[in-house]
Amino acid sequence: MTEFWRGIKPVPQVFKPDAVPESYISNAPTDDERYFAPLSETVGTRPLWISPSQNRWCDVLMARGAGMVNRHYHPQQVFAYTISGKWGYLEHDWVATAGDFVYEAPGEAHTLVAYESDEPMRVTFNVTGPLLWLDEEGEVVGTFDVFDYIALCKEHYEKVGLGAELIESLYR
Image 1 (spheres, rainbow, N blue to C red):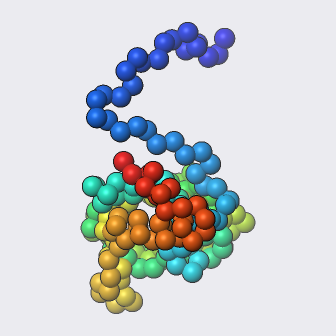
Image 2 (image 1 turned 180 degrees about the horizontal axis):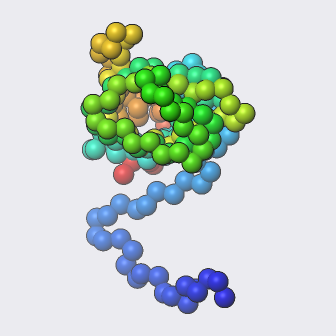
């Protein structure tokens, strides 16, 4: 018997009072492009978890071919796990592929690119905002926080028929 835990009873009170439920999303890196709101002409984002109170979100970033989000600066940390494809930053000499993990320390500026690959670039990012958009000289030309992210995703989901309320179901 390999599933030795089959006879163990589940915890009777899963959530403490006032706790919010878990979030479960099957097939997070889906091929259904409706779930990916465009961040640029070549890269889309599928929201998985959103915390307006923490200015934070988790998503799957996807590019079907060579792509770029843009240059940006992180005043907060970011975690990334590569699901498929190849990606990196023009400012670093590494290229992330399936199974690679990246920790981005607060204070880092970079240009996110997706490289040509036999499979789409799909990366799970856990972002604490805001992102500061940069020009070619590294000067701030805009901001992007969780509220901008929510608005982008709601507008896209409404446009493609998924409904803006789907985004609100991801709030925790």
